[in-house]
Image (cartoon, rainbow, N blue to C red; front, side):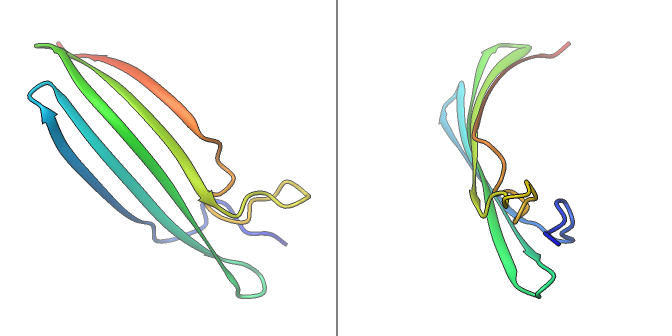
Length: 99
């Protein structure tokens, strides 16, 4: 039997943010998870995200974020060996408008 994805009770996370300019904010987020397998072994994995938020007006902003994971991936049967290790890297661009 493999590990159960989303089966962890605790995930440790931290975010660091910094204003690069009055209109640009940068952030880094890391989530850490440890799962136990049937043999009582532990697999740790990390999820990282770097983001930039640019204020493009009084009521809107533009977010660009890149996230990637580290840790054990999938086994031969396609089951995950860690909480985040099997997730692909992805780039997100989002425009938010407030009213």
